[in-house]
Image 1 (spheres, rainbow, N blue to C red):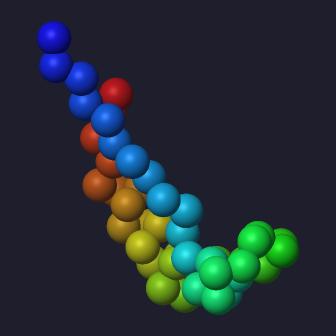
Image 2: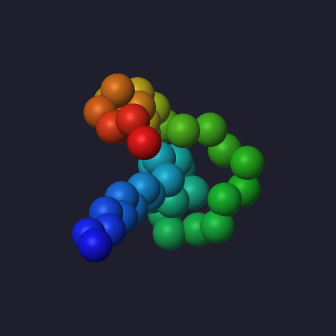
Amino acid sequence: MTSRVTLVSPAMSPSLRQARFYDGDSLDDTGAARARAAAGARAAA
């Protein structure tokens, strides 16, 4: 039996870029664009 695992990382925000814990900030422009692209590329389960 073959298993498939898809790893998903969080979209980038200023906190993640500075290697800090999430402090309520919004996604930056690059993170938002990559999240939109990933949403369209996700295969149906």
